Length: 243
Image (cartoon, rainbow, N blue to C red; front, side, top):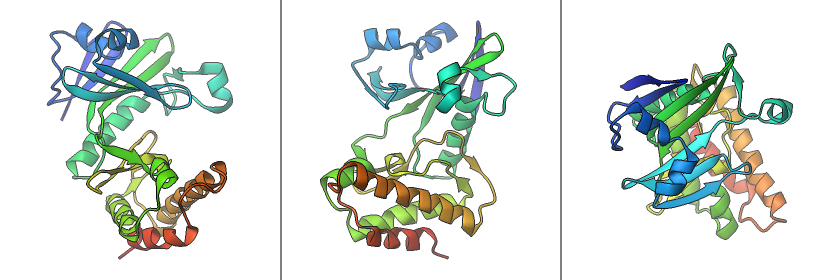
């Protein structure tokens, strides 16, 4: 379940069990302000090449605030604006609602907290807040420090199979969007522009091929310092595509 509210030129969507204390929509709006976060958060750090993702702690919750930015040529022209009538104008709400659906299916994804659309003339800016997945590292970090075990490759593949079985098309399945926690559990993150659809084997293999390319790319950019052999990937692929 979700709830939508409007404040001035912004629209918000929140989970029905939204637990952060706020007395008004104006206070909810401040949660999306970096100035407010910098003044009030117990901890704050940034990640991402363009610094669009903030990790912070507030009111006892560890959260992530992400702004949706454009890439490529449009990114140079529009940066963070999406034409209100375009198919991708509501990226934050789309991802929020998808995360709610995936959580309801019991899939290991981040817990959505709130999303915001900010109107500016004929354009929208998009933001989302999710809960941090604690005590975890993405696969790019892991393979810079050690080899993944055979069991870990199989568990990653088995986790991806759960998503495939539910028809989840992840448009950017790469090693930075797969996390391992300190108990060995696997999580998948970043569902921007993803959807639930009728997946065929070709769709699944295409996602796995993208994931393999990201492993190999990490090996190249670290000058072969990453702990990965392409032959290990067969275990992951077999588990992900198992009948």
